[in-house]
Image (cartoon, rainbow, N blue to C red; front, top):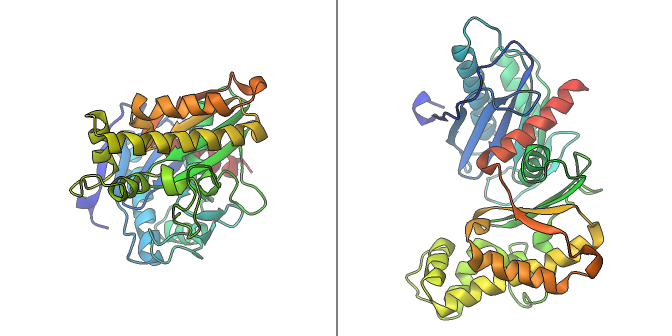
Amino acid sequence: MSQDVLSFTPLNPAPPDAVPLVVGLDLGGTKMAAALVGADGALQGPVASCPTPAHDGPAAMLDSISVLVQEVVAAGARRAPARAVPITAVGIGTAGVVDVERGTILSATDAITGWAGTSVAAGVRERLAAAGLGELPVHVENDVDAYAAGEAWLGAGAGAEVVLMVAVGTGVGGALVIEGRTRRGAHHVAGEIGHVPVPGAQGEPCTCGRPGHLEGVAAGPQIHRRYLAKGGDPDVPDAREVERRAAAGDRIAQGVYRDSAACLGRALAGLVTVIDPDVVVVSGGLARAGDLWWGPLRRTFAAEIIDPLASIKIIPATLGTTAPIVGAARGALALAEN
């Protein structure tokens, strides 16, 4: 990876001190971002990012991750040239179902070509050792799990014992954090709310190939698809424009958004009844849609939830794009301690 494809976003963090640090990395389908993180979760350097070579194969992906980690470490050293920057571990949040114990991708969509079966932890560790950073422990987890860990630690869920996290964007994902630990389930897919059958989604195709799931009506691309299918303006290119049309009074767009949020509200009412969390935290592109989306979501949830759980709040995430970096870093810190 050449230097010119890297970018750094300054966040006015404290300079790295001579205390153990980890690198947290958020691996997305189009971009990956990483930063140095201290034991308290504070970023200790700028966020560096670069394009994800999503369709160049696993080796290219692992190479890019390794180079980005090296750049983050080098940036920390440049900010504190008189002090050592001891890196003790690396944490990575990535799309896909992850075997966290092995750091391997069990299954993944074609958003990242050939990602399923990739031994991410071993591949990154080997590359970093070859680059002179030593045999660093590498923690790998699902990206929504990493996001949830960050929000539960330092964001909207801070201080709560049980946090249910829901991410609604190009897909619908979720995660459960109990007493600071992400609970992944026996098959590593706990929290996958997008594939819950929900009233209102009957007959709607889901990305998994089965009809009737929440993701088939609630995810951004499905909102766009349903808008067009109901006779919306064929020149509308995506869900963001559907949102703009809804805000401007487009009846079809308003109906699609309302139905999407209502389906999510019903699904959340069911999950909350089973899990009994302290709080539900919602992130992703749809969470920025304002009352157009939040209104029907909360009203439907309130209508469906049983009385003993009526006080549970559904609130937006607060850490933004740093949440998965911080969450992945927390996993790396725990791995380094062990």
